[in-house]
Length: 294
Image (cartoon, rainbow, N blue to C red; front, side, top):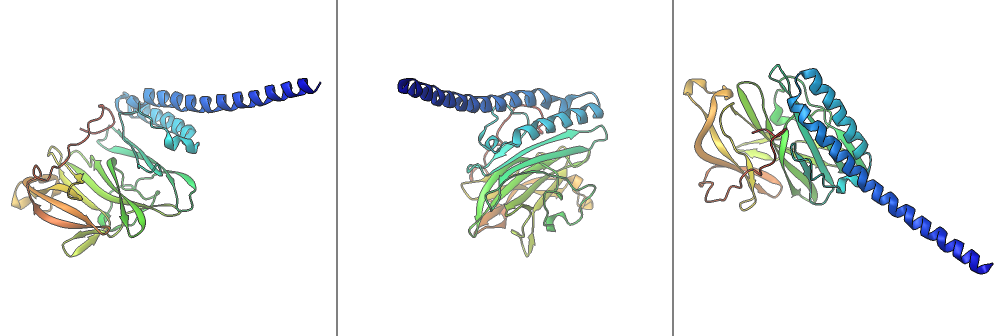
């Protein structure tokens, strides 16, 4: 009788371990399944025949992410199959930005972003960013949050310290309109919630919460963070004709290079730095064609 009880106990314990192992395996399988489903829908955001079809696909796209991101373990899943839109994750796995856009028939890009993060209370949070509508005045001077976002497609996330607090430099692209594009240098900080912008961009005698370059639609403008010199490196922009000064959809690179050098948590403007080839400006990381702009 005693041996039978011991045998039953051993079988019970083995069953518990089997169920736990199956549960862990099933969780991993779930992430892989949702990743595959998201991968199927992603091309429709760009290539569906009509705006209505794109927006319908977008609703399905968001619904799938809802199911995935509800589980904090998703922060550690790499989503390696999803290469047609930016997924930026900090090295400490405390922040991730999932970012995409939809080109609509009226030459307007509709931007979307989901931010996964752990706040200063170590609470797991998921925020869906809501872009500001229309023209945003004094955008360089605004402190914003998840419901007041300057829509962009981020391609680079760089952590840095300001005092003892973690901050993140965000570099992004915005296909502003049919005449101009923009590159956006912004900063994200996390306390109880998200904050976009901080007065840490020192441009000559001014301080900005972010720095935005607007330029002619067909101009090639690269904005990258160079680790060797701890600086954001970008071309100097000038109008194609002096009479067009202030009309940024006519601005193009003039061949000289500027930078924002990171020192003590502040980005200080440096004009006309040495040739970028000498300071080893990194190339933009190539990803598959799709939601990421050319």
